[in-house]
Length: 550
Image 1: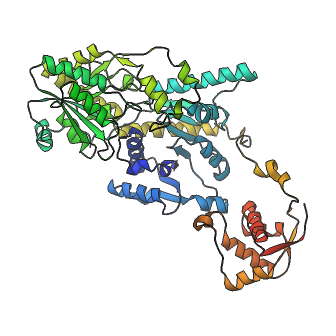
Image 2: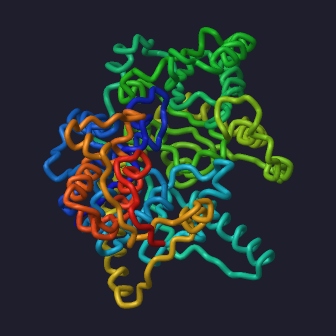
Image 3: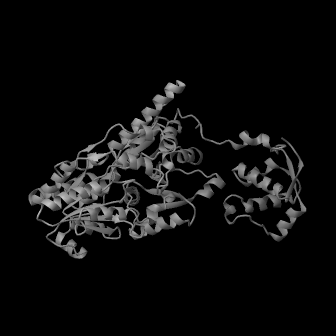
């Protein structure tokens, strides 16, 4: 099986960001597993040669001791310029850039292979029109798949498709449905990296007292896109007040150089008298050591931005019980009263003014979804008594904590080990390849609804059209270029747009006499580039039109 991995080279924060993003962790791990898989013989990655992200990907893979012999980097400009087509079994997209990549499939692959893309976020305000709406009109086939990381996410996507389809029918009386598949494959965890380690050793490394009960929060510290941890601090205050045992909350995973809302959290901590009970650590710390130093892990998320949640299964793999919200993908990963506790969440129908407000995201917040998501998250409440009781059970009962530790490790290795997850991807891809064979005889030429068609839209702007039969000849300025070979550029980067080597070839041909534009087709299979090059030469006086033919 050969795969083109699309999108990963477009995500800089996947390789250089300091904040904790589960999607970035997951995509890097998936790439590693694809390279290791015996079922995948070749991985192609579309890129700009020696660009920022190609070098970052190569550096990352070398750090992970990955064998790069079956990884091929393909120059996207070469594909465009030469109109090359690639042979591949699967197109997999990590950026969810489905419109661009389905067009790429139609133009630059020989066999229009199955296309899959993994979705990590479902709630950005713009998704209603540039994701869900577009998916209904994009050239998806029954052998394509939108891969959801949880059933909760699949339900969200299905809801949006149904909402939009219903509105389109009410407005236009047309029935339009998403034509691809919706499959669920969870994210994974490296159980050889995240594994139980002696708690005493880990605490000694982090200078944590052995007799303290440690609660760990690991993740983005953001009430805008992750979780408001004020309620957690309220619960911590209750626990500290009623327990003789010393209890510490470690908050880990923020960028120490850009703490954002940390001051507000610290003010809350001070107001509750918890300065000695809450410790902040940045995310440069060894995650495995931090997990294993904890008695339990917590993630009280309340945000619709969340779809799966990778930190609970990392804690799970380390044998650390989880106390998390009964929300999104946590409903599926954390088994209540087995690997930990899921805390009931409550919400009500209170979004109408937010959902229809076109101006709400214009507030000066740090992220395009900040206003809506913060407002919605602050309307999601967790059962704080249930959370308090869950922590208290773990504080009081070593046996329960140890049993949950064992069940957690077992669940992580049985369900979320990346070696298991990559097999599910391969099984899906093989099934899609088989499904594709049923459509070989009935496939129609792809219709791209989103093609701009600039010429037909704007051609009336021009005084006259230079047609393929028009005759052109070289000018004295063109001869000077051939003799001196001195091209002057407006922009340093224009070599990706203006192909001066092709322009020079055209000038060489014209030294022998005038020619029609269409006679230059042999210079490049992409005649559009040939014609643009000729017009560039005409524009700058290196060539002139001797006979116009529309």
